[in-house]
Length: 118
Image 1 (cartoon, rainbow, N blue to C red):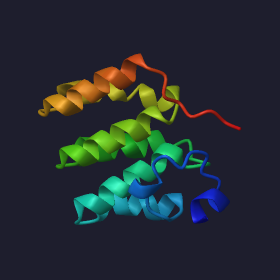
Image 2: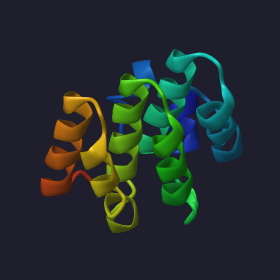
Image 3: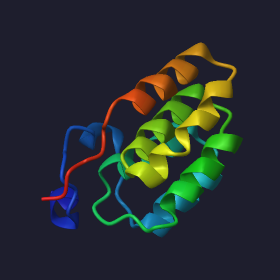
Image 4: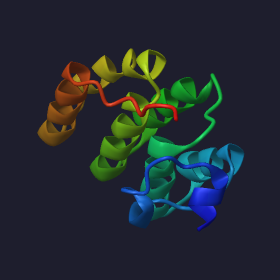
């Protein structure tokens, strides 16, 4: 219910997400020792109701330093959900050492996954 009250538009990712405002989620994404928590923070940005204009830059920074492939994949999905400003950062993942991460980046670059307002 917290996610609905906070304005998340799509509860498809609910089981993979965590509660918190943008600042708390960014802190978790950038600093938490557990990959599962970093992944949950990234997944939350897929449906976050009011992302800041700087969020794509923060996600790109996290992508460039994240050691765990599953977290990098969640970050890519979150970038894609940020519209053109986020999608413009997807090509950086084409150099990822993990084939599944590179493949996801290519797929997200060719599909429109932006969540609709409303």
